[in-house]
Amino acid sequence: NRQWRLAARPVGNFKDSDFTWHEEPVPDLADGQVLVRNIYLSLDPTNRIWAAQDSYLPAVPLGDVMRGVAVGVVEASRHAGFPVGTFVQGLLGWQLYYVGNGQGLTPIAKIPGHSLLLYHGVLGAIGLTAYFGLLDIGRPREGETLVVSAAAGAVGSMVGQIGNIKGCHVVGIAGGPEKCRWIVEDLGFDAAIDYKHEDVAAALTRYCPKGIDVYFDNVGGAILDAALARMNNFGRVVACGAISQYTSEKPPAGPANFLLVISKRLRIEGFIVLDYLPRAQEAIPQLLEWIAQGRLKYRLDVVDGLEQAPRAVQKLFDGSNIGKLVVKVSDE
Ligand code: NDP
Image (tube, rainbow, N blue to C red):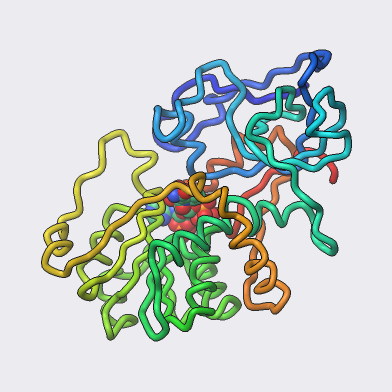
């Protein structure tokens, strides 16, 4: 087997030295076990949380295989629920082969005409996060203004497009001119704010003349504060992520504009997509239909080779990924 094991708790962005490469023979299967060859490994901002501390899941113990979501194929099985040839998705880890009892693995079907990458592109966690986060928690109505941060990322780019489909005025916040061009020209956002080169507060006033009804927050920090200041009465803030805080050594400061939550009667609600997995079948047919209609586009940033994972995951925190970041571990 070939594995990346967690060697150190990260400080700031990940460093190559936070992981060690490990090779060992694949063990024989015991009764009830399954052997999965990983094909595509998803790299996610939450990897930084898992490596650093206990959160909604316990921290990855030092020396263990790094936790990660992947899709793979069953190559040997002593488990009746997972026959050889079944494609599966789940916490398969940063490794070529997973050996285990299959707990938490979900069988997936290859969708005709699509690569298995679809399960990282929109199906699976990303699509469900965007779909349920926006529709269940943000509850946008036609004609309302939706603002989303990390808007050229995997989740953010989906959120903006679903907002469009629901008839919202959609403004994205992203880093750099290329990302801003992409979300407006190719994805149909109404406007984009380049937070690295523009004053976000002033731009929100300019592009949201009727105020903000739904703010889908992926970044926290100063951008959350700027959005809070422009929320309309009874607005909804979807607390999806706070990537600007993940690499910080200090706990995040509370938003300076917090008292507006009271006077504007705002609702701020966090969620974790894992709670929505049982409802996946509500979302997936709809997401597939929007893809088929060309109304929902997704972009993948695929890095070749498991060896690259520690370097590639750093892209999420320096912003050099566009769209969903995935490592190709082996051939489909
Ligand atoms: P993305 O594809 O959006 O990649 C992360 C992006 O975040 C980067 O490309 C970068 O874009 C942006 N970013 C990085 N650092 C900063 C910073 N300091 N300030 C502002 N933006 C920054 O990743 P995902 O789509 O996978 O995740 C987006 C968010 O959604 C994350 O916060 C993640 O934790 C959260 N999430 C939450 C889930 C849940 O269940 N609640 C499930 C999945 C994701 P740029 O160049 O624009 O800065």
